[in-house]
Length: 384
Ligand SMILES: C[S@@+](CC[C@H](N)C(=O)[O-])C[C@H]1O[C@@H](n2cnc3c(N)ncnc32)[C@H](O)[C@@H]1O
Image 1 (cartoon, rainbow, N blue to C red):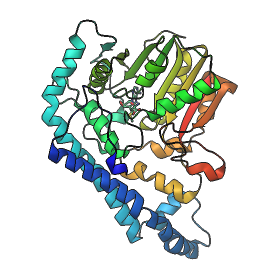
Image 2: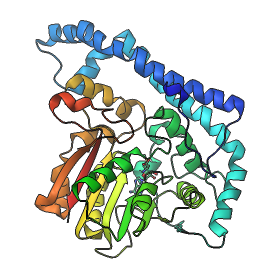
Image 3: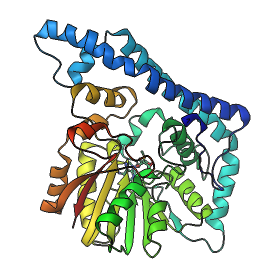
Image 4: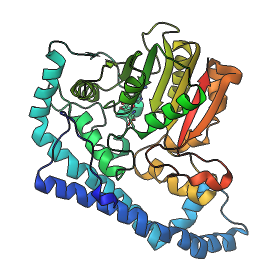
């Protein structure tokens, strides 16, 4: 059924010609196959082959994900699965990239139109002098050629358009028609737990194409919504996308580690799946900056993908991207005591973490249910 998923479009959404669509559908179907049909074989191979062999050699079972990885390296199905995962990821960008390049001149024109039109709702402020952090230039994160920041032409928007389309294919439709399930799920928690909370200003950090920014503007129409990213092409696209969807957001090219906003300017500082693409030093700086930017009573709500499961085998599976998909900080992030970092950043005993259920697919991604930790998305949180 996931093959039938239809992405929610808008006037900036890149199209796909028949053959381009067919290639993208193939990649999505291949992901479904690799995840749904090949992957289950790994746990059997672990229990029946890798774990017994490790145990014979060491007198004990693998104790952590590194030892599981070591034990699985010679196992043929693990090698095949890993090769298929990597190939599918490279195919993802092979299938979407050329389609975006073909229509880039038109997408750039459309974005310029929204940027320059009279009566625009939000704004776009770029800073060409802003240094791109090394954790974005040192590797093509999750194999995305050129990362978020590379520009193919003046006023380029390709990286933003590519991100939106690839995310639909990569997530197999599991983030909803507008890829905005994380923000909607966090907002649902806020509305449920703090129904009277009425933010005056909201900041979304690492917004990319803004798909997790827009729900904040929609749910809190009286709030001033700002969104920042270090990468210009994704911001140009995000701004045009928001304008085309008649949503008012102020986009700016800034580093979340240190922004020029005044102290106490925001009632909510949030992000969606940004933290795992930063670094050990950056995450600490981002928590400190979030604390500085919040007014008393304000919430910091940084959401992340599935929390890494505690058992060594599933931990190994989820850690695949750290080693094979150019997401070098992912594993380290999951080893950190995030609540302690939030506490140290100034939140003290008002630091906490949440697992919020997905509003789009309730119960999905619920790995930790057996451990009594229900919830699809992880949120590193604090209240000032
Ligand atoms: C995986 S994307 C997340 C996109 C989006 N928030 C979403 O919900 O899909 C991570 C984004 O964070 C941005 N980013 C990473 N580090 C940043 C930083 N220090 N300051 C601002 N943006 C940052 C990247 O440029 C990228 O666009």
